[in-house]
Structure formats: C-alpha cells, structure tokens
Image (cartoon, rainbow, N blue to C red; front, side, top):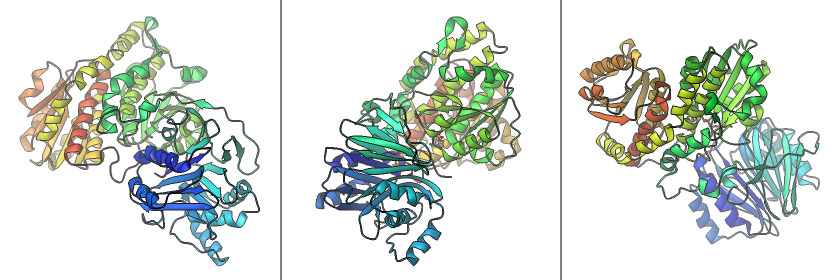
Length: 608
Ligand code: AGP
C-alpha cells in the first residue's frame, strides 16, 4: 500500500517529507523517493527502506520548500530505483507520485510511445507524467484535470511542475488523500497519521476531486467540471503521542496494552446505565429506519470479519434480527436479495478496505440502509455509509489488528443491546450486560499484568510447526482470530475451527506436530469442548487451554492453561482474545519477524 506525502510552505521541504514518509512506513513498502522544487525539479529515489533514501540525500541534498515524497508498494514493475516514485515526464519538468492502479495504462503507454514519449520505468504511474506533459498549456491543475480524463482506475496523486513553484496539485479516485492545514504551510498525505505531527486540522478529498495546495491556501474542485467545493475542516481527535511507540518495542505491543484505555474510549459517553440502554449518537438519525429492519448483513474482511462473527451471536442473543455475516470479497458477488427491512453493517478499522467499500456501494445501489463501524475518522467507508459509529481507538499502526478488534466488539455489544432495548430486551437485562461491559477494562488490566506468563508460554511453544485453535459459539470467532494472528505475524501455519467440527474432517490432520489451543470458558458448552480436547490430546501434540480463572476443568487435559477472568459469556471474546494476541506477538518476536510490518501484508488493503 503506497504512501503519499506532500509539503508546501516556508520550511525546507526535505526533512518534513522524510518525517512524513517515516509515519507512513507501517503501510508496507519496498522503495521510496522524493522530489523538490528549487529553481528546477530535483528527484532522488532508492530501493529499500527510507534509511537508504536518507543516505542518498546525504550525498545529494535537495533544497526547496515545496516537495512530494512516496513509499512504493510494487504493483506494476519490480521494486527497483527506476520504478520508484516520483516519476517524471520526458523533459524532467513534471513529477508525479501515485497510490492506486491505472487500469488502462498499457493502452495509454502504447499511444504515448507512438507519439514519441520515452518511458524509463515499467510502472503504470509513469503514464500519468507523460499525459500531463502532453496536456500542459501553462496551468498544471488544468493539465492534470485533462490528463485524468483519459484514465481508468484508482488514483491518489500529487503532482508538481518546474515553473510553478510552491504549488502541488492533488487528485483522488479510490485512493485516500488528506490535506493538512498549517500556518503559511499546507500538507498532503495518504492518511491522517502522517499529518498529526504538524496539524490536526484536516480535509479529506472525496472521489473525483482535484485540489491545489500552496503556502497561503488551498482549493478543492470537482474533476470534470471544475466546480469549487467548500469542504468542512475536521479536527483530528488523535494526539501526536498516539502515533509514537511510547517506549514499547513495537506498535503492536503498545496497541495490545492500550486496550483497557481504548475500550474505555469506545464506551465513554455511550451508556445510560439507569435505563440500561446505550447511546450511539451516530445512529440516532436513522434509529427509526433501524427499528423497522428485520435483517442485518455484516460485511468486512480479516479480523474485522471475525468481529462480525462475534456480532452475529450478540445480535441473536439480544434482538430478533436475522443476521448474515459475509466476507466483503464474497458479498459483492452474491445475488443480493436486500429486501426492504435489511441493513448492511460494514466493519472496517481503516475505512478504506476496497472489498468492504465495494460491498457498501453495492448494498447502497440496492437500496439497503448502510451503517459503518470504523476507526479512521473521515475515511471513505465512514463517509459513504448512511450512518455509523467511530471506534475512537486512535491510530492503529501495527498491521495486525488488535485494539481495533476489541473496540469493534465492545461497540457491537452496545449496538446489540441498543437494538435489543428497542425490542424484547428488558431494562434489567440491558443494565446487567452494560454494567459488566464497563468492568472489562479493569479485567483486561489484570490480564495484561500477566504478560510475562504468556511470553514464557510462547518460549515453550516457539518450535511448533502447526497450531489448531478451537472454540464454540462466542469463542469460535476468537479461535479464528487467534489463528490469523499466528499466521500473519509469526508466519506459522495455524487453523481456526469450530470445536464441533473436529469429527467432520480436521481430526484426520492431527498428529504430534499439531499444538491445539482450546478456548474453553466455564459455561454450559464447556463439557463438549473438553471432550473435543480429549480427542485431540489423544492424537496430537501439546495442548494449551484458555479457561476461566479458578475453573480447573481444563487442567486435567491441557499441558498449559491460560486463565482469563470470569465474565458474562457474551463478553468473553473481549478477554479471551488478549492472551492470543500476546501469544502470537511473543512467538513472532522470538522468530525475529517484522512484527509491525509483516511480510506481504499492508495495513489497509485499498486494492482488490
Ligand atoms: C488483521 O490483523 C489484518 N490487518 C487484516 O485482516 C485486516 O483486519 C483486514 O484487512 C480488514 O482491514 P479493515 O478493518 O481496515 O477493513
């Protein structure tokens, strides 16, 4: 997932641009580059990490107070210096950085080459530089507008031209772009995380919009007809410190340990205990429509999908809604019978996941009420859904989602109780769930005090080849999430399964190379899970049980037991998931993995 950063103002651009790129590193990249305007266009690019670009810049410092910078996640063309952004036109007067994919780049390249343009890279992006070159008649913004009229696909771009100092042109279709507003200086970035060091006043570009930023101001217009747009400035509710590691070795560990606070933030001001009812301001305008709904379809990807699976049990527990949870990448291909009375709930930390956004757009096309549960304020899904709720979890930098997941589950619990209290859920029952939900942060703090125990467990199991995570009902999605964490940051094979599925096939897989992690909280389903554990223990390798504090049932079967505080069954996911997050983290660290930026993954998957 590429990163874009632009600066125009009174300061030297290079250090500001490099700092911006460092804030975008978590998105994953394989090369980087920078361009500044100072009596001419200067470009420096390098393969590898930003440190390599900094070394190049020490040999060849760039002056100028206007510049653009980019971290590239290769899509077209290998990660080489020639393919790194910025890309320039034939005369080296125009520089372009781009996030997205130009779908008709091959045809455009052939046309341009036939007209004499010389390409120096294999990328789709370079096509833009030559198109703008051809369209330029003295005004860069108009040239960009004309060039983009030829383009199909997704883009977030920043463009500069020699001869137009102090001007950066931005345009967006499908790939996020945010403008940061300073005093006599302005910024552009792929996401807010890179801006909060400089300003918390931001503007999000929407699809098919073009903008110009200069030291003294900015302008936004609609692509196509150039109609001026008066966009409301938003204030970011994150602090600079939120994007620092805060003394932790990794963002992921910081974010795991932040969860008591982030769940408090998720609940703050949203519970009216006397009436046993949550208060979700973002849904108030559509509550009448929600009341009339009989069905809810939850769409999301990855960890957010597992939050959706928890929500299915929550909504069925407290409401009469029929619930469908579907991977966004599958939802969009189904023959949607979104009858009147169906709401679609999109869950997305980034609010930019392409598959989830496409599912939302498809659902809106079919007339469904679309709600969003999003962390990134002002993100595309947040803006394109009819209503929604923000997580208020602060920026989640680690690619592996942790605090966003527990905030999602906490707010989904609020949603389920809210919808239930507009239906069959009694005041007493609502108050009982909400009272216990408000205890979760302190229970999590107790759990996190035993971090060293989990670290020791990871040491003992560091050599495992395969993991099998099992759980029932509320613990089943947590088994899936626990397995995903092992896969995505420790790069070890792990399967998550419904415990009741063992006899339907997976048991054949089990041999001593498998370590089983069984979620077996006290309750009326525990007995069944204990018998699954015995079946597995008889055939497999070692076994770890995640059990309720003081409940000794699992100790007779498991080699190791991780205890979590007792709570209501419907709230157990919020506690069970944390030891699994820590276990995966500690395992990955022991294996020397790049925990915050695991290989092949990006924090926000804005391409399909
Ligand atoms: C989870 O750890 C991964 N980072 C990934 O599965 C993520 O949950 C998924 O890509 C969805 O992202 P979103 O919540 O931003 O839409």
